[in-house]
Length: 385
Ligand SMILES: Nc1nc2c(c(=O)[nH]1)N[C@H]1C(S)=C(S)[C@@H](COP(=O)(O)OP(=O)(O)OC[C@H]3O[C@@H](n4cnc5c(N)ncnc54)[C@H](O)[C@@H]3O)O[C@H]1N2
Ligand code: MOO
Image (cartoon, rainbow, N blue to C red; front, side, top):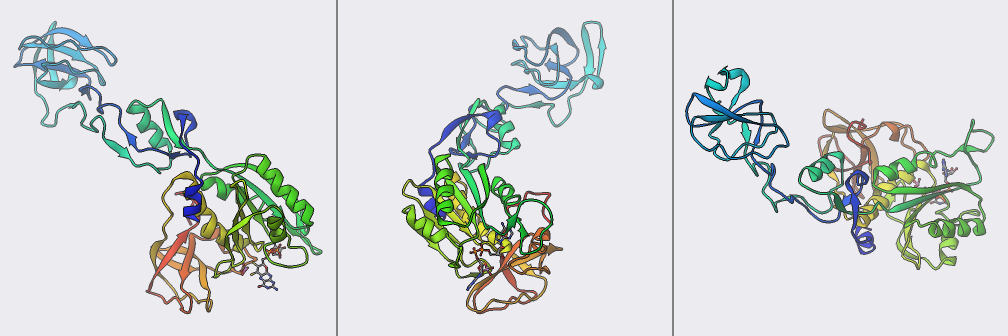
C-alpha cells in the first residue's frame, strides 16, 4: 500500500507557515541562517571590553544594530536579545555589577558565558529535519526562527467517507433491526489524525448498486483522492462494493487480507488514480483495515515514513486465530500489552480503551512474557490509554 501511495503522491507545494500545521515536509528543513544569526545577549547587563572599570559608551536594545566596542575599558548597556557588539569580551549581569554614573565600576562574568554564540544552535545550511516529517507547531516555530516564510509541503490528501447500510440510524436509539452508525461520526477523526483533509462524509448511502456507483463517482468529482467506504465488502444480497468498483473500472491493489478480524478489506484504484479503501462493516474490523491498509497508503501519499509496528512484551496470553494473523486489541499497563475484553468484530467497547493491535502470527498463540509487534491506533500523545 505504501508503494502505491508513494507512486501517486502529489508534488511539493509552498505553504505559508501558519497554514502548514498537520502537513508533511516535502523537503528537508535546512536552516537558511546561522542560529542565532548574530551573537546575542541572554541577559540584561553590560557588554564589556577589557578590564574594569568600564566607561558606558552606549546602549544596545533587542533589534538594534551593534557597533563595535572600540577600546578596552568601555562597555555598552545591553538588553536580553541585544546583538553583542564586536570586540566584547564578556557580558555581565546587571545585578552582578556596581555602577556609578557613567561608569561600571566592577562586575564578574560568569563561567558560562551569558551570550549565545552565532550559529551555536545550528550553522547555516545544516539539515534540521528530514523530508517526510509531519509539520507540528514545534516545526513551524523552528522554521520561522531560521528564516522560512513558506514551507515546501506535501498537501494533506483529500479524503471522503461513504457509509453503506440501510440498517443504519444517524440519531436516536438503536433497536428493531436498526443499529446506530458508529463509523460516520468516528472515522473522519481517525482520518484527520492520520493527516488527511476530510472533504465529505455521506451516509447512509442506500443499499443499491446505482447509489453506490453514484456516491463513489460524486466523491471523486468533489476532489477526493482517497474514498473510504464502510460495509458492503462481502458478497451478500445488498453488498454492492465489488460490483460498483467493477462498474467504475477500478483495479484492486489489495483484495482481502489474511487477518482476523477484518479480512474482507480492500483497496482499489480508479482509472483516474484515486483510491477506494473498502473497510468491512463490522466496526472493529473497520479499524483493523484502517491501520492495515489506509494508514500505510496515506503515509505513501503524504511522503511520511511507513508506520512501523513497535515491539511490546505481552502481559498475558493472547489467543491466535488459526491460519490468519490475529490483530488483537491491547492496552498498555506498565509498558506491557494486555488484551482487553469486548473485542468481537462488531464491538467497539474494547477498542475505545485500547492502545492498538498486537500482532499474533498465523498458527501461533501469544504467550505472556513474549515479545509481539504492536500496531498503534492513530491517536495523539496524551490520548493513549
Ligand atoms: N457468509 C459469510 N458472511 C460473512 C462473512 C463470511 O466470511 N461469510 N464474514 C463476516 C465478516 S468477518 C465481516 S467483517 C462482514 C463484512 O461485511 P461487510 O463489509 O459486507 O459489511 P456489512 O454486511 O455491510 O455489515 C456487517 C455488520 O456491520 C454492521 N455495520 C455496518 N456498517 C456499520 C456502521 N457504520 N456502524 C455500525 N455498524 C455497522 C452491520 O450492521 C452488520 O452487522 O461480513 C461478515 N459476513
Ligand atoms: O473479519 Mo470480520 O472483519 O471478523 O469481522
